[in-house]
Image 1 (cartoon, rainbow, N blue to C red):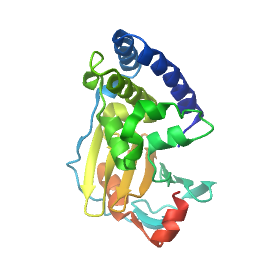
Image 2: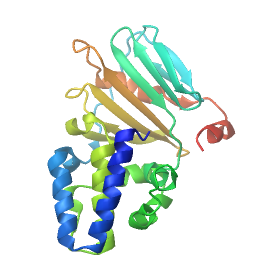
Image 3: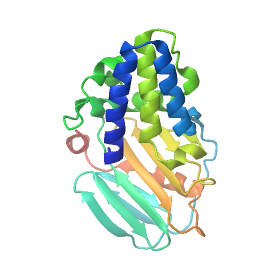
Image 4: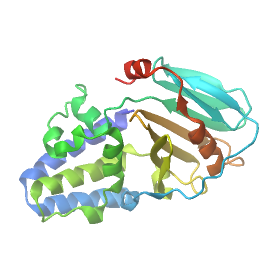
Amino acid sequence: MLGAFLRVGILIVFVTILLNFLGPPVGILLTAMKVTKARPAVKITPIALVDHSIANSPGRTLSYFGYEFAVPWNAIPTEKVLNKISFVHLKFESGQDLIFSVPGNKGLLTEIVEDPSLNMGGLRLVFGDLTKRSAYEQYQALLNTTPQSIRAFGPRAEAASDVTLLTIKAIAFGPGLESGVFSFELPDKRGFQIGNPRKSKRVDLEVFDSAGRHVEILCESTNPNIPISQSEINRILSSLHAVAAPAQLAALQK
């Protein structure tokens, strides 16, 4: 999901990186410092999720876009389908918002260089073979890039790629990034959780199943007196599974 802010941000990044790519290493170093000052959370990298508890409160099972999952809230949600094949926003009377989306399986970096409306095809040279990797590996590369991992005075192409990833990391991930990033691996899925529900009212899940299919889930509490817990997030995550045939899912996630 590339919003207007991300589109403008990537355009700025593209121009900046091209200048730095042609300029001295100090330009790359200054860009990394500027990004870090604006978004200190880019220093954070994923750690393994250790809380695997699952909420057993009354809830309901929902199904969208060929997938099914359970939520630990029994209230009937108000549903707003923003895209008939890939994006739905649910609001629960008990004070929770949930966005479920199926962004496709190409990966964020590949989407950026292939989206004609962004005119970012030139970034393909900067990203190198990253755009040929799986969506999971692209998110893994983004989340593991930090100011410390950038070698401004090392190979110029590598430094330009890393500082571009750092800048996209600063723009692409929600406010939960400041509170922590977690990696998870279940028998049928793996991915990343951006946000610690103990510290942030919003948590983003980037989920990749065993076939490499990508699903995004955003959970947010709209009632400060009823925060979303890790066990509630785990219930959604653990119950998520495909119910449509692989061919149908492939058609939805082109």
